[in-house]
Picture (tube, each protein chain N blue to C red):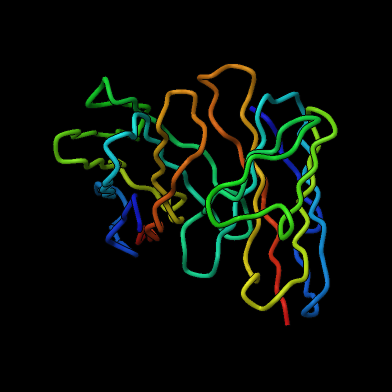
Length: 113
Length: 115
């Protein structure tokens, strides 16, 4: 049972445009959500997070939106840059202590120069 | 942020053998975790490595198959025992800092292929 789902395995976006990556979850006990970026042969790198008490968190070019009623979150990257090409994982945790992360299957983002 | 290293980075092993993966963190972390990423799959938590005591395993993972040690705050090992081709995966360790608001940092992973 996949509790965190990323339904788009891949996404291609023109450089300079907005990239939107989506994530859905089924477990209402999840309280804290994170996005990680992963380059080949490297471990996932933390990007941005959001707790369930917020609906938006922004950090530079990255913004995460959370819709608790729809159990949906999205990551917006604007403007997209070639270095953003990577696999993006969303992850969820049942507590703000950031333990026991449940990951989605990832979306491979390709930025086209 | 913590810097996490793993050894080996990759290995090819024969069925029935065991492999021990080492994870070293450059600063003290309160929690360390081991994950597995099977081909085309998401990262799945295997267990929480507890310092000086038995690891806490997630459903579907058992100590006999994946014994874990954590002798101090900055070092842990994961052994994949009696391997089969189904164990071919990337194994990653992660650490979380002393504050509950710290994020989890991941090592680069160990790519294991079992023939």
